[in-house]
Image 1 (cartoon, helix red, strand yellow):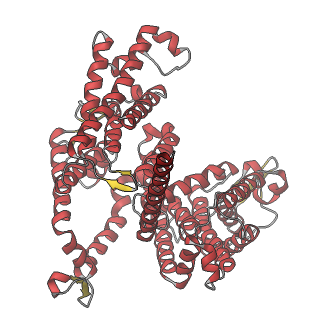
Image 2: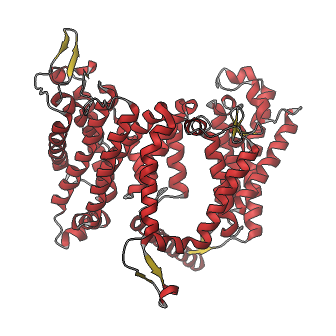
Image 3: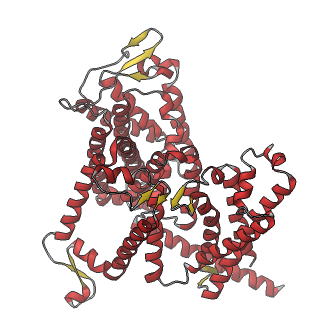
Length: 592
């Protein structure tokens, strides 16, 4: 029970923190479904729900994973949720009694409106606090029930709710896309977010798809892969049918058509954000080779981003901004973008080996600190007077090529989307081929156990340098496309935070997972750009997303299968270690 109370207190503290930073009061009127389900009301129940889910998970006792009974899961969820709600309610009542203006002198986001919202607008505030505690207890019970309800019921419900909330947040994007293809939006959206009818339809469709996936998932996967299940051939396992799966061809064709028409449907604003997402996908794919495949923690990856951008500007006729006017760099050329890009990639691969050479003997935290220092050095150098004649110093470069083909300029957001998409597909293909090759297997062995890999005859030095070179080459393409997209670059675009942002993309999506990089970029780069009202809270969203993923899904949103197995083996080893320590403590207690 002590663990349950602590979890509830943690959940309540999180809700209080969100109130103190202004997130609750500011979005009190942001409706998601009708006028009843608002973002701020959702915040009040999310923390109790999460702690209810957390305390209802199976736990390790005496080295064995013990399942929790339905009664325990519901009871502990209710207690944890009630504690979380009670802490928030007590804090609101205390602030009201002490004086809002006095508290506001320290926490400027605390207002009477916030107190009234938290206490449900009831008088006296203690009544509202009791009501909030009861609502939080219900949310905690629902969180604990997630471990009680069978999968065939739980998964459709979760899919329906997640889809409804996602469309509620995208209420400024989806209606525009529907209008572009002449679809009526009144049945789905109003000025107050999703209509209840639209939410019911969308939720029903999502639940139906989830049920179909649960019942016929194996059959659908076999049809896509072009294989026959064991029950169909009379033996365990699967066997290839021969030929190409028609369903797989149809799905791939549909995905290709969807990617092609996407910018034509969503408009210029979303297309511009999608272009930025493509750039960060390229950066994520490059860093995924270094961190996800080879296991080399690189915190200075922004160096390749900056190198690709500045090298493209120098080779394609970019000019320097200076007090003397617009001047060319001391080293410059006037090449076509498509001629300059292979040169940039080769140079970036060479720079990657130069950066990798001094850190070959470093591992883990030491490698991270050194690469972080190298990345910061690059940020300082491009802004220093020493390199001003080459890269423009703090003023940067301008008039960088727009990579035009004929009369098509890729400065236009929709056109740039297609250019970036082509390079993303190429990078995905190269990354996939590398992972499945002998090089990829060597990287995997080196990541899992470098000493064993070296003892087995794998040249870890060569493969480390190759990882830095390939990661740098792909990252430089992202920098080159960024320069084309913007047309002018300054050192402000290449701060160390970019390295942390790209690392967050790789970790959030799943180390070593190519689809994970795409999903991570969409979540950490795409959503903050589309949901502009949350832009000032983007750093808070980054931190929260990483913390939640590390706690609840450490393998990432779309995990790599091999990485998932590694984590499971580590977890079993930790459980065995915990059991051994408990047995030793028990023996010592008996002996004393």
